[in-house]
Image (cartoon, rainbow, N blue to C red; front, top):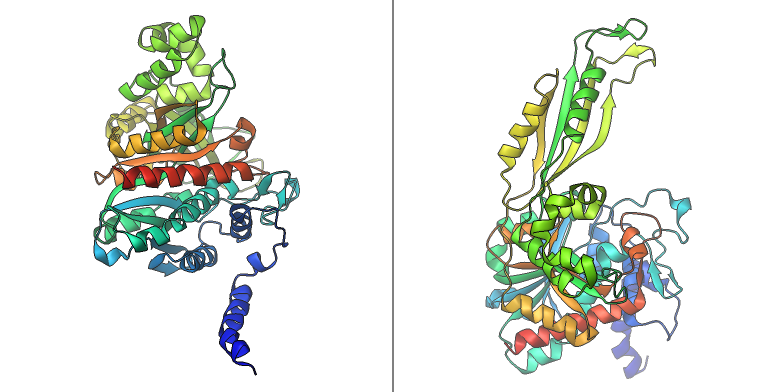
Length: 471
């Protein structure tokens, strides 16, 4: 064996072992026309990391971070709770830390035959990477990883004012208890974060009627608080459907559920949403611009319109959605002796959850049902605009040019809340321009991420890091 072959043999053996451990990347076609970001996302999507099965995908991403020269710290390595950090500097140095947050878990793929490409194929086609998690949230992890890796040599050559860390967590899709919540509760001192950049808003067009091509970027600085509860009704005996009683569990449940979902929620204009609409109105023309700039006045005359538009309604009011119904599985002519319904409520910032539940209980007081709290999201303050927010805003403008950037209220739940709860500012943005069709593919069939969007996102994160270094 030659000296050169002997020196290279450990590399060849290691590389072969790596391909065996991570066959997704090994199976990718060699194509010089495909960017590194697309190839990495394609490989990452091929791991079916549905919540509870994150470990293999997370190990793949952690190993990729090591290959890129980042310092990897694995916090937990369970199959359903694999959480790790990848940093420019070792966490042990205790440097103030800029956290780039992403999650490895995805929702189930649903009916696989309905997809244009198999949901875990990671197909690269028509300018997209296809598959479950391609947008939510694996694209963000790839953007962040490749952005950080570009600064590895710089961090070796000079002492940067911050550490920069990719924080990859599990379980976001089911509330974050085995991921970000666990990290925030047990490892915050080790991370020493000064800010968190996670998921939330994105860039969209079609916001302005007078200029549909004008891109708007929404950076989430707050989110609605989730409160999940169930109604339950039961009776000790069964009954025959041919002789219905005056009251029985399924009837009581339906009437009580109807009382809740038909209750009109008052519109509440929070300062954050008011400022968002005012900024939109300053770029809109005509009557619509006037209304948006003065939404506080006009909302009293637009109640019907607000309630008919799901997104506007979600920004201006608490919501309550009946998500599921169930009961005893007996014969179709047998009255069930128990029945239940589950509800998903989202509360505006500043709304007291106890008061909200008390009002719900009063609405169903006349029915033979019980209300039981399933779970509550943490209560967290709004992350005010400050130097970290403006650094991100500036990075978006540096990359995309003539765009409008605004802070927004995020109507759903994500992992940012666990850091805001502890007083750490958290800003949510997928830094890409997404058409409505792509946004609607999240948690749906044919989820796919545009390759161009990946590369723009990397450019934004790199600009953000440069901006923060220069603060």
